[in-house]
Image 1: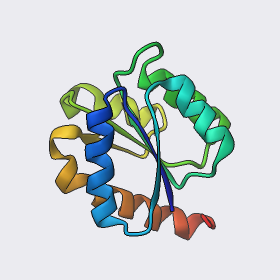
Image 2: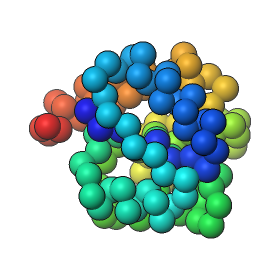
Image 3: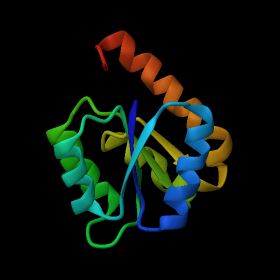
Length: 128
Protein backbone atom coordinates (compact mmCIF):
# COMPACT_ATOMS: atom_id res chain seq x y z
CA UNK A 1 0.00 0.00 0.00
CA UNK A 2 1.30 3.44 -0.95
CA UNK A 3 0.41 6.48 1.15
CA UNK A 4 1.27 10.09 0.32
CA UNK A 5 1.70 12.44 3.29
CA UNK A 6 1.46 16.14 2.41
CA UNK A 7 2.35 18.68 5.06
CA UNK A 8 4.72 21.64 5.03
CA UNK A 9 6.34 20.61 8.32
CA UNK A 10 8.86 17.78 8.13
CA UNK A 11 8.30 16.86 11.80
CA UNK A 12 4.56 16.45 11.22
CA UNK A 13 5.17 14.27 8.15
CA UNK A 14 7.58 12.15 10.19
CA UNK A 15 5.08 11.84 13.05
CA UNK A 16 2.23 10.81 10.75
CA UNK A 17 4.52 8.30 9.07
CA UNK A 18 5.44 6.78 12.45
CA UNK A 19 1.77 6.47 13.43
CA UNK A 20 0.95 4.75 10.16
CA UNK A 21 4.05 2.55 10.06
CA UNK A 22 2.90 0.95 13.30
CA UNK A 23 -0.64 0.49 12.00
CA UNK A 24 0.14 -0.62 8.42
CA UNK A 25 3.22 -2.79 8.32
CA UNK A 26 4.62 -3.01 4.83
CA UNK A 27 3.14 0.30 3.72
CA UNK A 28 5.29 2.56 1.57
CA UNK A 29 5.26 6.31 2.18
CA UNK A 30 6.07 9.33 0.08
CA UNK A 31 6.04 12.92 1.24
CA UNK A 32 5.17 16.30 -0.19
CA UNK A 33 5.69 19.74 1.36
CA UNK A 34 3.37 21.75 -0.89
CA UNK A 35 0.67 21.46 -3.52
CA UNK A 36 3.04 21.26 -6.46
CA UNK A 37 4.86 18.35 -4.86
CA UNK A 38 1.52 16.61 -4.20
CA UNK A 39 0.53 16.82 -7.85
CA UNK A 40 4.00 15.69 -9.00
CA UNK A 41 3.92 12.66 -6.67
CA UNK A 42 0.42 11.70 -7.78
CA UNK A 43 1.54 11.80 -11.42
CA UNK A 44 4.30 9.22 -10.88
CA UNK A 45 2.77 6.72 -8.43
CA UNK A 46 -0.55 5.14 -7.61
CA UNK A 47 -1.44 5.92 -4.02
CA UNK A 48 -4.15 4.27 -1.96
CA UNK A 49 -4.56 7.31 0.32
CA UNK A 50 -3.50 10.95 0.42
CA UNK A 51 -3.12 12.75 3.75
CA UNK A 52 -3.38 16.45 2.97
CA UNK A 53 -2.76 19.35 5.35
CA UNK A 54 -5.14 22.29 5.04
CA UNK A 55 -2.50 24.97 5.65
CA UNK A 56 0.40 24.74 3.23
CA UNK A 57 2.56 27.36 1.54
CA UNK A 58 1.40 28.62 -1.82
CA UNK A 59 -1.91 26.95 -2.52
CA UNK A 60 -3.99 25.81 0.44
CA UNK A 61 -4.84 22.19 0.99
CA UNK A 62 -8.44 22.93 0.02
CA UNK A 63 -7.27 24.30 -3.34
CA UNK A 64 -5.05 21.26 -3.87
CA UNK A 65 -7.98 19.01 -2.91
CA UNK A 66 -10.01 20.46 -5.78
CA UNK A 67 -7.26 19.59 -8.27
CA UNK A 68 -6.76 16.13 -6.80
CA UNK A 69 -10.47 15.30 -6.94
CA UNK A 70 -10.63 16.60 -10.53
CA UNK A 71 -7.66 14.53 -11.73
CA UNK A 72 -7.93 11.53 -9.38
CA UNK A 73 -11.60 11.38 -8.36
CA UNK A 74 -11.41 7.94 -6.76
CA UNK A 75 -8.36 8.67 -4.60
CA UNK A 76 -9.35 8.88 -0.94
CA UNK A 77 -8.11 12.11 0.62
CA UNK A 78 -7.95 12.62 4.38
CA UNK A 79 -7.58 16.25 5.36
CA UNK A 80 -5.40 16.81 8.42
CA UNK A 81 -5.18 20.02 10.39
CA UNK A 82 -4.73 21.56 13.79
CA UNK A 83 -7.84 23.63 13.11
CA UNK A 84 -10.96 22.62 15.06
CA UNK A 85 -13.33 20.29 13.25
CA UNK A 86 -16.24 22.69 13.64
CA UNK A 87 -14.35 25.22 11.49
CA UNK A 88 -13.21 23.03 8.59
CA UNK A 89 -14.50 19.45 8.59
CA UNK A 90 -17.79 19.99 6.78
CA UNK A 91 -16.13 22.31 4.28
CA UNK A 92 -13.49 19.66 3.52
CA UNK A 93 -16.06 16.90 3.15
CA UNK A 94 -18.17 19.02 0.81
CA UNK A 95 -15.06 19.66 -1.28
CA UNK A 96 -14.53 15.91 -1.73
CA UNK A 97 -12.39 14.79 1.19
CA UNK A 98 -13.11 11.33 2.53
CA UNK A 99 -12.40 12.34 6.12
CA UNK A 100 -11.07 15.08 8.37
CA UNK A 101 -8.64 14.26 11.19
CA UNK A 102 -7.34 16.78 13.69
CA UNK A 103 -3.57 16.43 14.11
CA UNK A 104 -3.98 16.53 17.89
CA UNK A 105 -5.94 13.26 17.76
CA UNK A 106 -4.13 11.66 14.82
CA UNK A 107 -2.48 8.98 16.93
CA UNK A 108 -5.92 7.61 17.89
CA UNK A 109 -8.04 8.47 14.85
CA UNK A 110 -5.89 8.35 11.72
CA UNK A 111 -5.33 4.60 11.26
CA UNK A 112 -9.00 3.71 11.99
CA UNK A 113 -10.10 6.40 9.50
CA UNK A 114 -7.86 4.97 6.79
CA UNK A 115 -9.06 1.42 7.47
CA UNK A 116 -12.69 2.51 7.28
CA UNK A 117 -12.13 4.40 4.04
CA UNK A 118 -10.21 1.55 2.41
CA UNK A 119 -12.78 -1.02 3.51
CA UNK A 120 -15.50 1.07 1.89
CA UNK A 121 -13.41 1.80 -1.19
CA UNK A 122 -12.48 -1.83 -1.67
CA UNK A 123 -16.10 -2.88 -1.74
CA UNK A 124 -16.75 -0.30 -4.47
CA UNK A 125 -13.69 -0.92 -6.66
CA UNK A 126 -10.39 -2.77 -6.86
CA UNK A 127 -7.55 -0.80 -5.27
CA UNK A 128 -4.60 -3.06 -6.18
